[in-house]
Image (cartoon, rainbow, N blue to C red; front, side, top):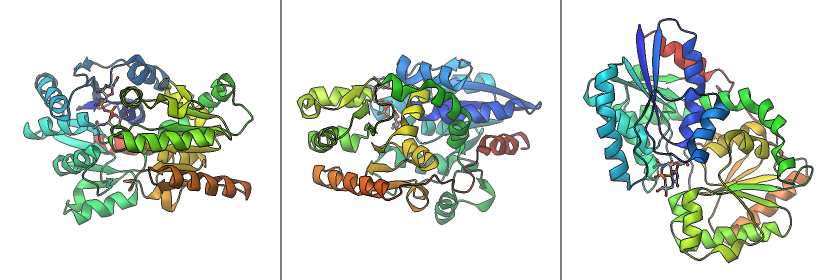
Length: 363
Ligand code: UD1
């Protein structure tokens, strides 16, 4: 018997664990447990994702909630340790780059329990991003580094990670996207939101670098408002962004923009697929738009997902009104001239979960 403990905590983890859990079920020699740290806890940020993705209820919820990075990371560590003592798994499987990822990896590795990192090797080379710190440390701790793209293999080798720890498996989030795409389409969210058959923009912003200071947030909201004069702009707003807009008194800047509560996974994909363009600072949306062939403008100075630029539809833009407006113009022009086509980088084929489950089951 191989026992796996999967640890997830925040919204972007949920679509990554789903295909691995499903694929591992097909291996009779695997027993698995799902641990939710509780980093995200709102119905809209967590429970709705579990139901959309067909995830089982977690076996354990650590209930850590929000806090500073230190507090949140420490709480996950303290609550996770006794769970590990009880379950005694062969592998702890961690996902992505959130605080729960690095916290769980650190606890497991100090107990001599092997750690597998799904989505290993991505690097923005920007240490002001908390996720970059989480990625670097998790990859140092992990015994098995499961990479989503070939650039990740190169990054890990350059950091001196032994070759035998690195396994290229492809992008597991794309498994979920391809599996649920039809279901998302059937939901017809553009119709429900009154934008079906019309050009519209879809956007999300929640990175601390964009929303925790008034200046970049005001610039972004200003440009969204400019765009809203031409087409509906649907902004699915993260709770932290909503709180900052109120705190900085910026609500009036974006009066023409339609603010939506955080959307479910299926609603998001349904809106993404028909969007004229996407403006974001999310990691996941950069990948999903590449597969769907929807142009994506990412308000960041760097990306840990470079294939979305070299092979996909993504482009980095400044967090500054005139720069965003110019990039929007360029996208609309290009769309008029024939547009963007979907792309599937190597291993973004819907089978990454199977490759991960096989690798874990055989070790
Ligand atoms: C986290 C991840 C980020 C990921 C994002 C996706 C880290 C360091 N960051 O950022 O990589 O892109 O999730 O959403 O792990 N809040 C709620 N309800 C919730 C969860 C959070 O209201 O269910 C609010 C709280 O005010 C909280 C704030 O959002 O303090 C930030 O939450 P947190 O989990 O610390 O980070 P995210 O910004 O969500």
